[in-house]
Each structure stands twice: as structure tokens, then as C-alpha cells.
Image (tube, rainbow, N blue to C red; front, side):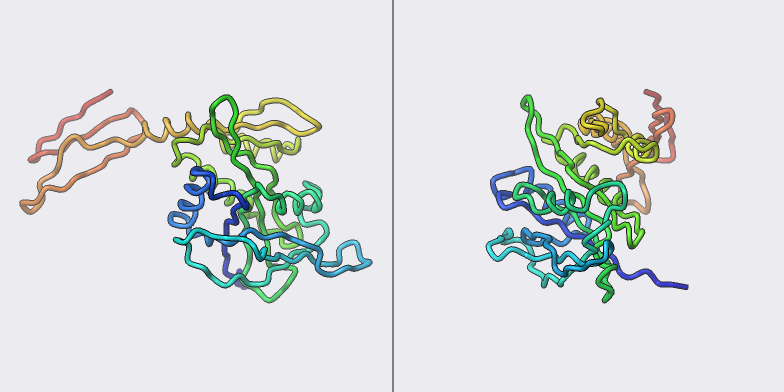
Length: 260
């Protein structure tokens, strides 16, 4: 039985992230609540040329002038590589992906394997930026894909994590992206709650209403109206009930059921 190598996830902020309160909040939540390491801004460049269409490597390099918040625990950044061609398979040009990683205003979420195999290190990448339109802040996902060579389907983990972070930050109203028109891709985003907004340049616009999702999550969390007595000590009890919205209140062995 083959043992999967250890997985690591990082977030790399853009150069101007310190001017964005929302950007700092995203970094903080990814680090403290989801175990991401924060790395300085990096670029991915061609490392090794090859005549073979599948040959050559790209190397991740941390920029010398990159900075991090003082609160971040600085860790040694390992040398990471990824296949230079066909990283995303037929879903996306590798050149587009790596150009997106290298843009100064993009955050980069990245997953990699702890392995000595250079072709089997970086397995998933997601790039995004924070934008504002009509007075509303939103997350724009520019690129997302997985290493086609490795075959590890980690992009779903990256975007689900980003959605969870977005829901937890009140200033973020929605998430927007453009997806491939493949049925499997459209079904994936539909399952996540995205709504199609129309085709542009052969890609489907997708939008996830974070504010609405935040309200739905709040409705499922029911605050207890009473406490239970156990061993002479009062203990708070939080009950969550999705169906019927039934709130059960226990107090001194008496049970009341309130229906909204």
C-alpha cells in the first residue's frame, strides 16, 4: 500500500497586502484557523529547459524584497518545483497559471507534497485578489487548478477553505470567477453554491453570494435559552437543528419545545 506524502498548504500575499484590512484578515484566518503557513511573495520561473514537451521544471523562488507581518512565525521556505508543461492538463495553460501566480496584486494559495520527487511537489494552486465594486468588497479568483502529472485533486480543498474564510469576514460580499464550460466543472461549482452569470470569452461567469451564505449559516446556529443543571453546576448547551427549526430547552428536568 502506497503512503501518500505529507501535505502542506501556504498562502503568499501580494506586495501591497499591508494596505488592505481584508487582506490581513484573510491571512490571519488562514494561518490561525486552517493551519496555513504564510510565506513572503514568491514567483515561479522556468528552471530547466528541455526539448521534450513534458520536460523541464518551474522553480518557486521567494522575492528578496518581500515582507511579512511581525506576528508571523518565519519558517524556512523549501525549494519547490513543478512540471513546466501540462501542469493543469487541458483545463488551463500553464503559462497563464504561472503568470497569475507572479502578478503583484495576487494572493496565492498553494498545496505541496513533502517529497524528494521534483515532479511530485506542488500539487494545487489558487490565485485571487480583493476587489471593490459598487461599494462592495469581493474575492476574485483568477486561476485554480491541480497538478495534472500528480493527479491529486486538491483544488476543491483550496476553494472550500477560501469560501469558509470569506464567510467569516463580514466585509466580503461575494466570490467571483470564470470557469471552463465542461459539464463536470459547471457541476462542481454548482455544488459549491455558485450561480452562473453568463458566458464571456468562452468561459462561464460564476458568482457565490457570501452574504446570503453567511445569513444561512447564522440561521442554523441556535443560541440556548436556558441551562442544564448537572452536579449542582450550570452548563450552557448549544443545540443545532436544521430541520423544523426546533429549539429544545432543558431546565430542572422539565422539557419545553418551542417551534418557530
